[in-house]
Amino acid sequence: MTIMRSCIRYLFMLSMMAQAFPVMAQSERTVLLLAGEKWWGGAVTEGQRMPFEAGYSLDLRGDNRGNQAAPLLLSSAGRFVWSGQPFQFRVGKDSLILSGITDTVIVGGAGHTLADAYQEVSSRYFPPSGKMPDSLLIGRPQYNTWIELIYDQNQKDILKYAHAIIDNGFLPGVFMIDDNWFDSYGRFLFRKDRFPDAKEMIRELHRLGFKVMVWVSPFISPDGEVFREALAKRIILYDNKGKDTLQWPFAEEPALIHWWNGYSALLDFTNPAAVLWFNDQLRFVTEEYGVDGFKFDAGDTEFYPGNIVSYRKANANEQCELWGSFGLEYPLNEYRAMWKRGGQPLAERLRDKAHTFEDLQKLIPHATAAGLLGYPFVCPDMIGGGDFSSFTGNKPVNQDLVVRSAQCQALMPMMQFSVAPWRVLDPVHLEAVKKAVALRTVFTPVLLQLARQAAATGIPVVRSLEYVFPHQGLENVQDEFMLGDEWLIAPVLTSSSRRKIVFPAGGWRDAEGTLFKGPGVKELDIPIDKLAFFERVRQGEQHRHTRSR
Image (cartoon, rainbow, N blue to C red; front, side, top):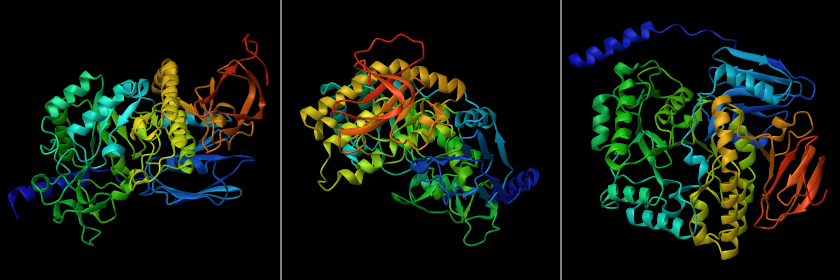
């Protein structure tokens, strides 16, 4: 045993002895339901199942469901459940059963509505930072190279895509270069065989009016130069080889984690040396190439299995939370996997959706669920779907679906293109997409105002109807959302142009000036180039309109 290794082990043992003993907590708890009470929360990708019905269960321990999650439940009666650690819950007929508890669980209340519960728990446990992500993420469309290039990221085609954005009449915004711009995971150098002059490429993207982000992850390819450096620095996770009591100073075998791109080592961010190393790599990319920010991918709880050994003991959820810290240094950021971190200036993308109307229908309940878990700066995946397998093998593209997807995103906090609409759409459908982008431009001041409000107060930008109009029987409306408190948005999410629109109590004026009175339901025909949205008419206000319905 070397002297250095002995010192490391000695210091580690001292630090472990200095840690406070964990507070013992009740392992199971039952919360009796109030009459008519409904519950939301846990994981964003369960949004379409909210409010939860009797029989629903979810175990948050080591499972973020591929997206944002938090140890939080909220009720329509103004109650909430919060814990510092993940837990399991099940909704019964008359009760909410919490189990697998490893930390204090707080059951509290404030007011009598879903909004009351959210605003109370937000102010207590994840207060807003007062900051927001880079405003360009909200003020302009985003463009990601994933669907067009997949793993063939290269300088020529990236610039071709960027010029096509401008040439086809779209506004420049944030430009994201996706996975495989390097030659191995953990190397933060543009690969020369595909990027002969990466610096000049970034400069040209800047001249076109874009800010540039690149894809990064916490993985390191095994057997390479970076891997050997990581081993020497002991900044990756280790495998306990079946010895559950093995401590970090005595671990020798690196853990190889199975993820969607194969098997890789994984950085251990409980180790300050790993945090320093990764921050150095990010800083190098910004200084060497002029990159403006990062798309932080992976970091899911599933990549931290029970056999790993880390510098400091941490569960899978805590490892995911640590991954979320890096984006705080870069206003131009994007995450998909997240645990806690509510109230922070992080852009949170919904997980990849397939090119189907079924997945399109998940955008609204997932986006509103994100807001309820403390993630107001939500990006609703890529227009038309971010699951690349939907666009391979000469699969047909549903042009109506691409348009309706763009319309659904047009008045959400962010909208992101990946599949090139000018490549897959005919002139009629392309013009409809441009019309959706133009509408967003009109609403940009509203979106930025609401984003600033979210940064200051934590209140979501997009809100469910139940959030804004409590106790009106609107808790199950999942195909409409409120933009702030004043705008009702009702995109078409099926292959039919006709849809039923639920109007909350009060008056609602559409873009043509027609007044609709709620509460009530109207069935309308929505042409392919139209997004149905309605401005709230406050009682006593004088609004001119062409006719009432």
